[in-house]
Image (cartoon, rainbow, N blue to C red; front, side):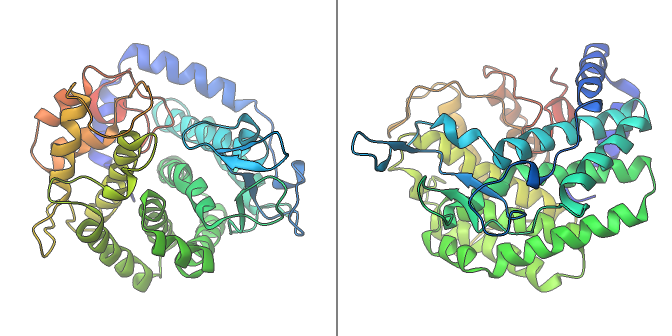
Length: 359
């Protein structure tokens, strides 16, 4: 498995809280009857209508008709189209796959159907993000649009769960082929190279998504090893001696984006760990490691005032702290989450109850 721990899954299967079970079944029943959707249901500006597109989240129309960036303030228009569909699809298939594993395999089969319609049918989406996060009025996306793929990591988690319940070699082979092509694009495209040069949280998520998708696809050892190297380079070059991700400090939500950056690193470390590569305990040439960042950022989730710009925001529990508690033998990282809002079911690495008994 790429991200999930099979032993934890088996333990949960025997001890799943009744409230969690009922909530999972309710959500899965809702997703069970949702219609299949394809990229062609949402025509946009790309010449090839099977290319994904989305609009830049922080750009708003000014009185003169031009679109101006207001960092941290969402333009609700950006939530429409394939981006919204992919978010909904990712949520639904993970819920269905979890229900398939814990309740009934009919949910797993439905998850595979939903994924097949979007990715594998004759109307399936092309494996690129060329048109992602376009500024309205432009007919091309931006390199920063690569960030749209970060939630899709949960699709791989869903497929890992599906594979535990039903055998469909054709589905699995074709999904591996699709995500293999997507990993290639995330690794070699001009957009990917531009994001590497910027070097902020978007590149960290690009690297993490590339790693997860390449591991899932198989036969891409060169890309996987390069992702491990990039993880190390990011840790060395993008954190200071405290563990702060300095590229995010000029953002209006700088604590949010530091935590978001850390989540990307944690997901990559966990994916590597499950392949026998220990990035959780890696030290850079200047003795930087991921534990420093958990230590540094955790104190601000515990109430210490954050000294940089941060819009008012309600922070949610983070699975990365639960997993770091185990991998780094730091039970105090669990305590950091206790005063925070429960995370949503589509959080990275799945709902929190998979990792620490949250409802």
